[in-house]
Image (cartoon, rainbow, N blue to C red):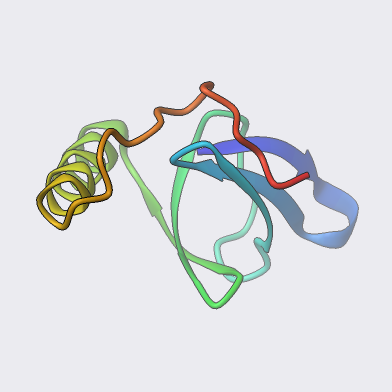
Length: 82
């Protein structure tokens, strides 16, 4: 989920499972706070609607829990890597 935007240089900060990361948004155009994007190697490559994002997050949580990573932090839990 996008939590900060720097429109002048096509960058934004996303938060995923409590970790914040700077990404480049040039490939997807203008983004908004709270919007979900698919990211590959630091570049947003696709905007995702809320319903699809929630389903993908649920699947990741299920996978991580199955693989023994325990409880996964939710957006806003903030274990950010600032």
